Amino acid sequence: MNTKPRGSVRQTARQLGEALDLPGEVLPGFSHLELLGNRQAIVDGVKGVIAYSDSCVRLNLGELVVSLEGAALCIRSYQMEQVILSGVIAALHFANS
Image (cartoon, rainbow, N blue to C red; front, side):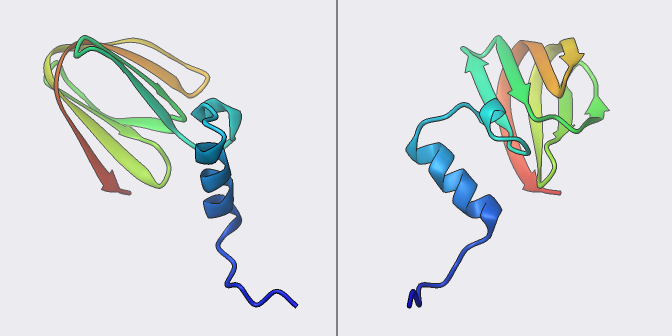
């Protein structure tokens, strides 16, 4: 009999995805953030835009909220739960939603 405590399915899926180095879009319900230098961010798993200005963009990722701060920020594309953001990205902040 297995007496190991079980984690949630979400936690197990996250660990499996990390162990296999799978991109976030492969596992539904997970977010994936990719930075191209400090000039562009590609964020998958976006549930909505909470705030949007040229100095701060806040995105709802379900269990997390990510804030991207900088200058001349612009959402270039928002489709299929993916946001492509350009500008000068100076900081990222994560918070539980």
